Length: 187
Picture 1 (spheres, rainbow, N blue to C red):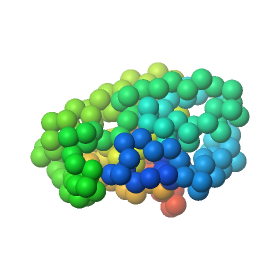
Picture 2: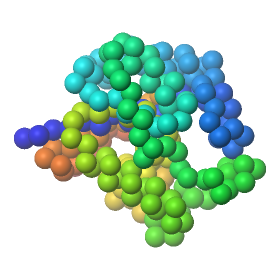
Picture 3: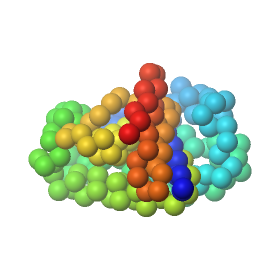
């Protein structure tokens, strides 16, 4: 049996809001949150893991403490970047995202459907244990799809929360949601 673990880590708190800056780094609190990852019991045995990140600065900065601890190279993968919104005015982004969160998959804009499909495809094709530093909606898009939810949004992962997805022989085995509750869904 071949078992693959995906660990999706939401970035730490950003220095600026999503709608006000195209690529903010981490706030002081976000830096502390990221530093706390080195003491997370779930992240003690990452020697065999590939380290992947969204190209966004806050995701890369969140990865830094674990990269140093495990002496790893960070692979940048655009697939795990935040939801595409370049054509949305910054002043409208929050409202746009709020509306999108509960929109049925069949009613999503094509750019969002393509973004979601690429996340799912890439994640299902991972061939080794991998940790991915990414964004709130990326985590939701993948979890929602795997659990066959009809909306993009599934849950509210906290900053630097760890969502664990386990595949066995390319089939979903379990999901442990990275919220304060650490809810486990076995399939």
